[in-house]
Image 1 (cartoon, rainbow, N blue to C red):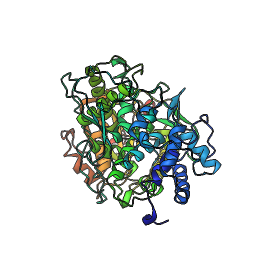
Image 2: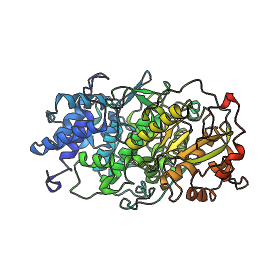
Image 3: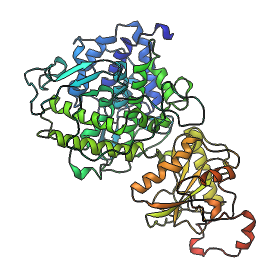
Image 4: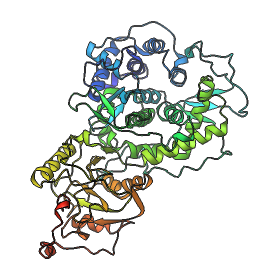
Length: 591
């Protein structure tokens, strides 16, 4: 099937609604295929092969819109995703194989129940992704960033309960024409284009700009200007979820459970995903991953002229080597790219606007009844601040279960937090930087085997390891004493970059994780002191680590402690008799 014959305006929208609403009735746990992003892409490809031979398009979309009408998201989603423009006709969706039908029924709706997360799949980059917000973002992107103008000069004016849109159903009061104005167009003032300028590969996506998370979200301001419009793409992916998660009151703002990770029962054939925090909110890492992916890909689709590529092709690139050959525009770098999509003040307006819209579409919502605009503004401000600081501004960390860590041998020792030092290493071996999840995870397992079986240590020595694939890998983590810097393991975190950096430097993404993201988030969480000192391994132990070129770069970083002079490897003999006591023998030097 050539791209020239592909007509996404009609066919792809029908396919998205088929995937988005297909088989919502099955109970969780009925999928017959592994919960992999590759399986979702396979389902898309199968639909795309069959859809051109049918007149799917808007008729299929209408059929699926009716089929999922009882869903909790339907009023807002139906309205923003142009449900009211569809004719309610009956149509059987294009047939999928029983296995793919079961898969799509499994992942169509995201939820968190009893410590398990449903509606998520494992992506090739090792991340877990919620499918629902991803598909919603793709659909919104195909609409071309529909803007909903909010005419709210008088916040005391109640919604016109006598006016309803056909797609909202008889129990969902709609909005009067005077309250909402839906238009289409370019909304770059609302959602700046994506930045992918974070790798050393040279290629960048079209119309990108460099950016970092705007974490200077202002404190609640009751005089803040009411939002005049919302971007449907940001609302259906990020803003709605952020707003609803923080509606329950200030007690949730500091303990929101935002961005909780989890573990699959197995990585080769994943079926069950258990959250590491059983009390986690629905805004898990997987949900936010899917929301960011939906927002980024939706933004890309809204700016891509016809003929657009089939969605299976687009997702294969995004979860693979990168869209249009750009390795910076792939799922590995979703947080950095997402930070450039919208600023914190702009996202605050979007969250606030989403809550206003919800308040009028769902006036009976238990958490929205009676809330003033000042209260909604306060919720939106705190939600955005938490998201930008605790998620976008932090590195994506793969937990131990994701890279296949062996169990800790013995009993770990707790660190006394917060710590005052960050020690930087390079692994030397493996020498080549790892640029994808498969190779980085293999390097982690190899280092752990060496440290446990050859060195005789309890576990991999480092606290964290940074790959060149856009991810940080959990070693001993934030709470356990490591074996990375002889004599200093209990005083600081040991962070290693995979590779030999004697004559070359790590990727910019890897450097940013060590220089900015890890320490910033550790300080925010009370794990690292704000006045921490950064040291190269060679400043405390006679070694060439972390490599000459990397160490020279460390000298230029803000927290580098230049008062601690490097120790050369030639001095090792003078220290040979000064062995640590047996009780700390396992906290020996790595190199």
